[in-house]
Amino acid sequence: MSTALLTIDLDAIRANWRALDALGTSQTAAVVKADAYGLDAGRVAPVLAAAGARSFFVAVAEEGAALRKVLGPDVAINVFSGHMAGDAELIGGAGLVPMLNSVDQMIRHAEALPGHPFGVQLDSGMNRLGMEPSEWAAVRDVALDQSPTLVMSHLACADEPDHPMNLQQLQAFREMTEGVTAPLCLANTGGILMGPEYHFDLTRPGIGLYGGRPFEGARAVVTLDIPVIQCRDLTPGETVGYANSFTATRPTRIATIGAGYADGIIRAMGPRSHVLADGVPCPIAGRISMDLIGVDITDLGHDPEHLQLLGPTQTVDDLADNAGTIGYEILTSLGARYARRYVGGA
Image (cartoon, rainbow, N blue to C red; front, side, top):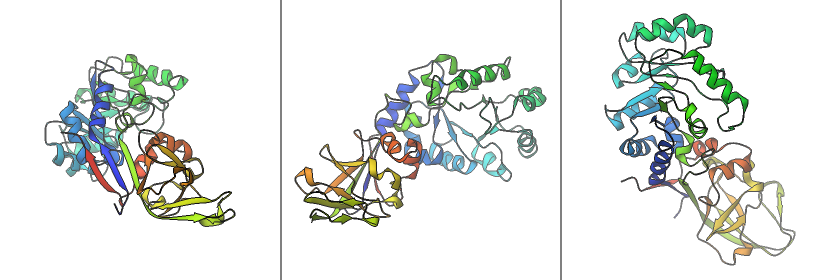
């Protein structure tokens, strides 16, 4: 192969959704924002719908309208950003459900699309999106009289189950929704794993579907195999790449592979990361550059045709740890130059 190959296992995504769905008795939705975390919502969402997901979440109305064309009319598509100025045509035409985040959005929605379904997002302490308690108290009766399809909030620290913020937000959400008869939603992936008190009527896993923490039982979804362009021998003292950051201390065999930070392989991960050939780890040698990476294959004993950066052995979270970031960024940074292969999903 002449370009790096990114393989997405749709069966693994479906298995991860089913495993999270089995952890509770509430309905399980699916978050497919950011093009299904970079893996193509058009390929991922139909697999989840066929598995039983009847409700999906996207970030903005444009994502929702594109998803509606793929999924058809029989599922709910909820928009986290709510009803933004200029969104009425997309929301109405595609049958989207905006999660209204403020009084201004409530007014905009009522004026532009009277009678159109909506949900409400509450701020239980994250201070990102949603109505704060005082704002909600002022409009609660008016909002509930219009029968919202969902009332939701978002956990800030669900990836740390012992963090006191989780109980603080749970209590705040309970107080803000006391007496509300509309369906309630609080739990993302981490919230699902923290137990049924967080589940309410609907859960909405995101990163866990795609093989990331905090769902430690998730099946790996993505593998990335990168072609070897050239191999060369170094004598002790020779260097590799920019800034001479790798110096050979022994006779060394270097493979140059065809991907780099332009493909979402974050430069900072280089010193702590490796690639694999037949399960054998080979350290990255020198700096990750825009299109190329040097790899020390001396101990491999042969010249491989390709090397694997991502897979069951070295996951998105492993690479994230090595780069000082999170698995979400690794997934959503995967570049457009990869050849993509989808397996499973039938």
